[in-house]
Image 1 (cartoon, rainbow, N blue to C red):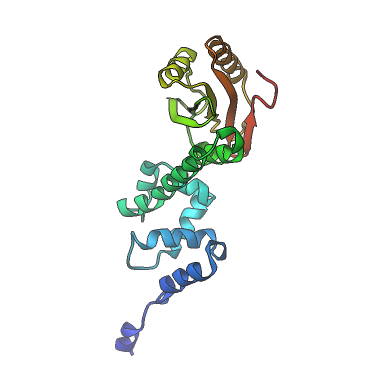
Image 2 (cartoon, rainbow, N blue to C red):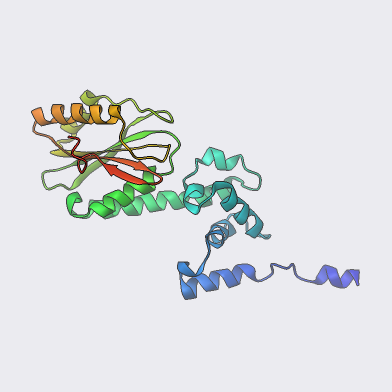
Length: 231
């Protein structure tokens, strides 16, 4: 009897193939979030049942987005996640960022504003510290460069208008879009956000450079300082 039990396949036998087939036949909408995580982990962990780990990761981070946006060093400290597993998870965010960036490169930015917002959310919505990004545009509002100008703390990022303008001049940019995140999740602009935006707008305007907007990204959405009439 014991010998027979040893020959029986594990309870998850065939699960990987069935999950792959379901994805190929019915698409991603047929999968739950933890099953998406399973698929990502299959290549990194070629043997064993990864469903418990996938469910635990989803429970720990609260959402698929939060998991895939988590810093690699945080993931590496978790039990069950080796280097290969961390890479398998983090490469998804990188691929999503590159896809979103390519979409805004292909046409004038102001005519594809929803794609700009999507890119900003992928890049910043789940960040744990404030990051200040700049999109530099040419005369036809096409993207010249996307650059991180500063990285700060959980509630502050030092921003220097002189450096922003200098970089715009270096690139020959005609206009810029300011983007930063609020790790608290609330995209409401602070007094400092408004003040620094106005400083940059004033300095840029003297040199014929237009500031199209300042977007603040939070987990709960985004705020446009331009739409609020704050500059």
